Length: 363
Image (cartoon, rainbow, N blue to C red; front, side, top):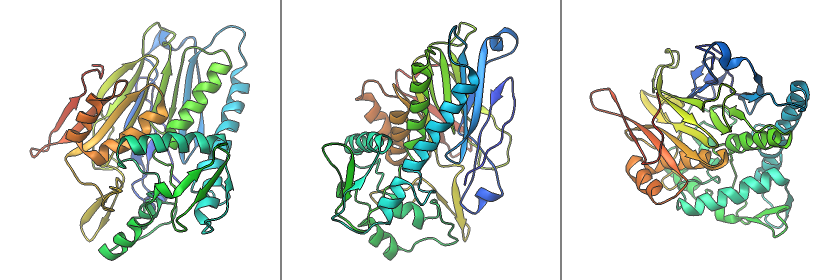
């Protein structure tokens, strides 16, 4: 399981990730996105803050307290219940989850029952898979596990023959959702699904919609660095999200590259400089290209994507790491509603940044 820590810097929440499966039990990582709830003094006077653990990381919720709304305690219970249900649907770390049962089955005739969480993520995944020409591929599960970034630890890396054989299982087209959106069947018995590149973003959306259903119109929701905002901070300003400056050292002090103001938008970040394996002196990042089967290596260190909902931002952030900066920038330019911020490494060891036309400038 991933673990987390909480640090305070001018009322800033920080979440931590792990480097690899073996390191998940011993070494903390700093998050790719720093969530900035506010400054000092009056900024926090009418701010309700809730938090907990989910999906191997932590979540934080912040909202302006309106009149005649449910108590924070009851909202906390509702959030936790919703996130437990989501994990029971799509967590590959839970053997009894819907996705794990489907993955474990090799029967190509059975229709597996799924819930609304699974079907919503599946439909969005199919849309983004098609839009990115497979750069986002939730059937990448067999390769994720082979490279040691899944639920099971591994101290080795697959050879070329193993990668070639696993590529035949990276087959999202083999999964069929029936017309009622209640059942899934797979035609490739060895194919597996892994929604880890979209599930946290979807979880953010679930919590955001729960808050809206309780009459809360100004809120900030974050799970593992993926963020959705609505309205504004009680201080009368936009919510703020900080993008972390890349640092290879897992225990290095966290620094912020950019602080982005956000109103009624979502943002997710993907990067390859923290989550990696080192085998025989060579580093293998967790971003795996589903078309080649190998760890993606480029000067692109992280990409932050802004979209209307967090599920969409989350999935495209992963796809853009696979595409690389040039391809991703061209893609964003042709997709209204998407914006992106790229951090690249340079030969001098410094960082360069580029952004799409509509990505906001911050502090």
